[in-house]
Length: 104
Length: 365
Image (cartoon, rainbow over all chains, first blue to last red; front, side, top):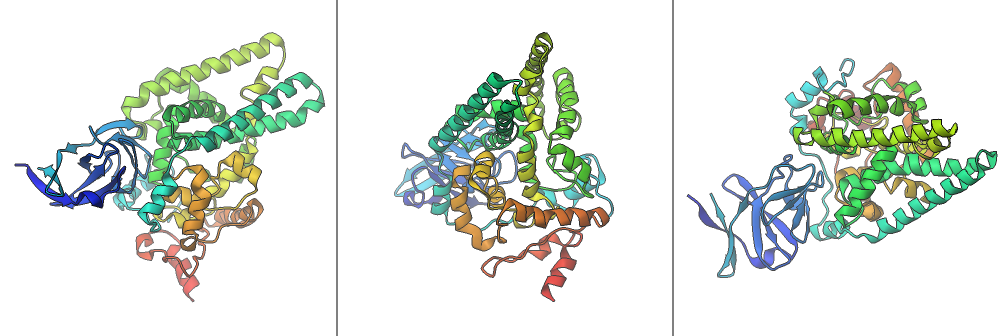
């Protein structure tokens, strides 16, 4: 059953950037979009075992630091080769000054 | 280690998987996130400027070459055009393939397609081969872009300064791709969803070459081929010269780019043609940094890297004797010293690299 997990404070992530968030043996990425909203996806690229947290956020795209594949982190959609498989995304909300992520 | 087996279906490829090399995490220098974000920032302006210069000079050289043809006075213009066509296209293919040269995606895509045609690489296939090259740089049997295998075939290297081996391989492969899509070897790194693209683009390239050849036959002149096709041979020397330096004579089967890649300081003309890929250790460690930011990246992390070679000539003086030693002893490689400020090589990462531990012991004595 999914739970809302306290991930970080909003100020922990610069605008148009992301951080790595590990929980229960899984790794995730939490993004601060240019629209001021927060988003969450799996933390590893779907192409190879690379942490997206070292990558580059450009508007609503996250670029993998190893092969420059890109995803739309709002939907998880793979946007640029060599990534072909979409990322899983997770609901996020900000409550009482904390960023919460709904994780399985 | 016995003789290396570079086949993707061979024993060394399997060994790389079994030993966990293919899943290993590469060493990289620690760079503060804010600094790295600044280095990674994308912009269109430098690549637009360089592309206008490149294509402008190419058009001018080809135009003057055609106007002066068949006089010998046209020769210098063909030599300049050839290097821009047959060598600068290599770096444009590379940078735009990474998607880092321009900020605007379609600009990367357009230049990537043009450059792929000029350098005679199927853009659909080579996008994937290069991804593998970055994941598994110089893993024997796994990296499809190993320029010089061991023991080095120096005759082959010399012929390729004029593109002879590459072009001889390219056309039969182009026809196979046009008929059947990727070859069995290419299917080891190109996903099935892309096989149709491989076939389609091969047919387009084949059509352009057929039209050029027809024009040459019709006009009883090689002039059309001087503009399209042949410059990949008479202008290849610069990209082969700089490309050999990227990894030549260095370690294979390691997971630290300081051991398998080489940074060489170069003159501004070569850096324009090569789009700063002379900062090759830096590029492999941080492939999302655009070419125009590589000199800054070099300044940021050079304290953690072996000293760069100070010129192309110095690089060759280091690399070529290593090739010659590998003729007799193929496990030999150059293990360069790190500065005192650098994190040492992780010997425990590389226990299985032939020659690594022996060289480390010698260095310690």
